[in-house]
Image (cartoon, rainbow, N blue to C red; front, side, top):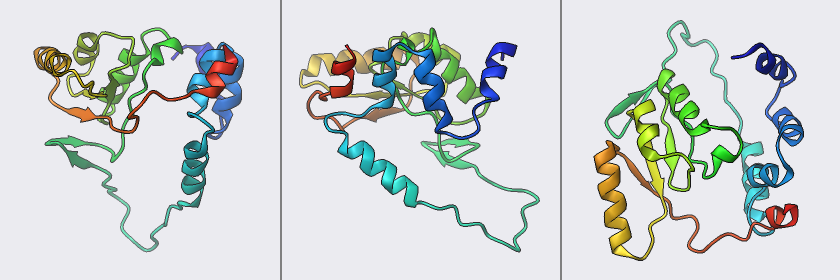
Length: 179
């Protein structure tokens, strides 16, 4: 990490601090894409409310000399039970970010999933992280699905996540207003 990047991160003390920093760093339309949800953002608000209710439950008087956070998913052992989720268009935020994220996940042995909406070639990402997963929305046209599966297989992906959260295109109001 560069000294300049390290200097910027010294001001990030909690998750919300990334918001102010990214607002200064990114063009308005890109910032809105990353920060906002779809439509009237009810799901975004509801997800944040639910997350705020979740608490870590410390366990006292337990042996913590050798903590075990690992998990096995799809036949692969990982260090932590979470990973980097797919973010379509992430390369708008930083050049080559898909490969950078994939490399970081691989070096720390956590799952990484490339979005079908990524701007980076899926072949480049799998070279960076041979354990990468791929997440896709499936179109109605079976020939497109067959072509995608062939390409994923040739590239070396072994895990495909089917994305089913958006049956129709999202209405990204904040992005539209941001231009």
